[in-house]
Amino acid sequence: MKKISYLIIVLALSIVSCKDNKKENTTEEHMEVTTAEKFVVKPEATSVKWTAYKTTDKLPVGGEFTVLNFDEKTGASAEEALNNLRFSIPVSSLFTKDPSRDTKLKESFFGAMLDTELINGTIKVTNGNYMASLTMNGVTKDLPLTVEITDARRVSMTGTMNLADWDALGALESLNKVCFDLHTGPDGVSKTWDEVAIEVSTFLRKG
Image (cartoon, rainbow, N blue to C red; front, side, top):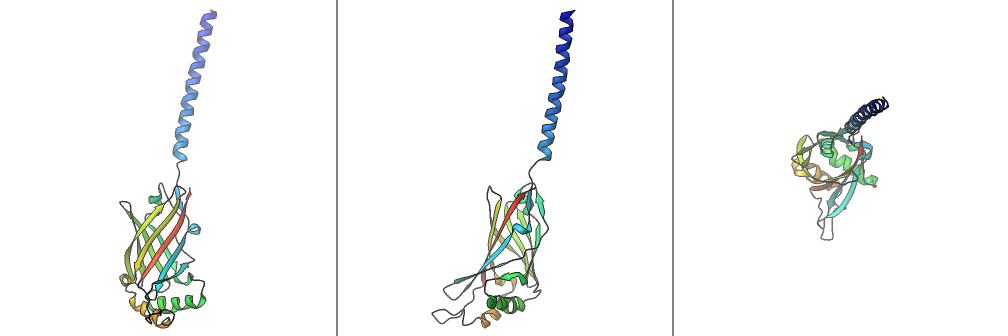
């Protein structure tokens, strides 16, 4: 009888142990599903800088837009989080650390365009290739982007705008008139280049 009782106790403990293991495994699997990392793009972690050029020596003039509007977007990957991210940039947020230059850019360059309040756009990703569909001066064009994403979830997107693609050469001429002397180099030629380098930086938080 003692042997039979002992066997019954061992069998009962084995059954309880198996049930506990199954419950534990199920819990672990559930945790893996529910705690999967998300990538979140947030406006407060994003900056937009630009570099324009003057004189025939192509001297750089840098600035930024201090405001970038978009809805917080989440994805299962960095690419998914960034793809189809719509944004708008108020022209009024342009900043170069030179109030006089800021005024000239806002009034004589952007002020000479259509739809002068906002630059609108959407980030698009196709087969790993990034571009920004930008609307400026009433024209929508795609701007190819070079994108780098580090293990620390920092994202850098760079590209070069050719202002002719947005029919903005007239606005560029308007700017060059008010900046004629400032954009004149040692050769006596006043020139404002029709290309602008863009750099967007952001940080993908964990969701």
